[in-house]
Image (cartoon, rainbow over all chains, first blue to last red; front, side):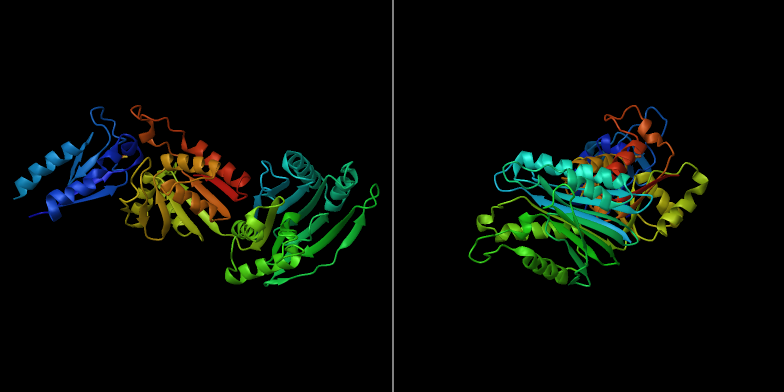
Length: 87
Length: 385
Ligand code: FES
């Protein structure tokens, strides 16, 4: 079983766009998934200068995938699926 | 040498204005420093006006004259006399010195200053100059050479006369008492900064006063000659991307403390020098992003939000224990600060979706550097790359 890595961006853009509300994930994720998922903060993930209009901060990176307009629910949904798929 | 200047003051009990006034100015290009402590007659607002007028005028005079003696004589001869008490309106101590340790000191009416070298009091010779207009006014003129580690301490008579008339200190603290307080503290903490030392002395004075109520305005100013504590702040990616490696390397090899303010800058340094960045989750609460750790770098923070907050903290003098508070302490713990400011526009901040108005980096740095120079008497150098 592969460990899933979650990185929450706390760069300037993501931060002002609300990434601080995601900080609860630092508690929720280990509680919910134990050591199957690791979560850590990250400096600018480089997505905010993306000119794609449909993509907005705050960003979270789950393994190789970038989640835009990340919310706690959105991240947990994706993790739920991934964790099930992994098993 | 660097001249570390500090001053601490407390008002007379129950007064709402300081009757002593301290002013200092550092001249970046020549390494010259002028500092003046003036004590206005009486206390409260009247004394405050007298003292601040004397000190600011004296500063302007010394600045304009090449000779401190002429400047001080002019002031001594023209200070008015209080009609009731028949003594002059204000007394003063002034020093004009440079980073090579050449110093001229003039005192008129204030307690004699302390010169400390190797934790011993020096007793320099002086010349007495009597006023031509008021023969009861004399000033003492000293010409001395200071070396690394030397300290000069000025105080108002609120210090030397503290606890006057009490059972324990019938004649007040006096110069001897002050010397004891200072030398003991220096034995304990030989490298203490001027700010901390002056604050400590004022605190001690307050402690020995009955009921801890100061009977007079109490001011202590200190000049400490020592090696400068150097620091560098790297903020913003450089304009010319090709030079990233050069700037990262020169920053990393800087001889002094180092801070990075900016995620993109931190990423750049990490990339160019193969370092790892470890963001800290702990401080990531409230209104500012947290700090990160990088080997060999003393502090890594986010950029523009943190800098803006730091400027605010420096302005008000009160800080929280967040990333900006840490950056403020980093700056205040240094004497010579270099800012390496990348001039590349950060695309991220032109995002029209940003809900807050973000001042651009240059302006914030300008504000911080002005505050550090004017309010905290640091030596600041800003370089755009
Ligand atoms: S600040 Fe989050 S991707 Fe740039």
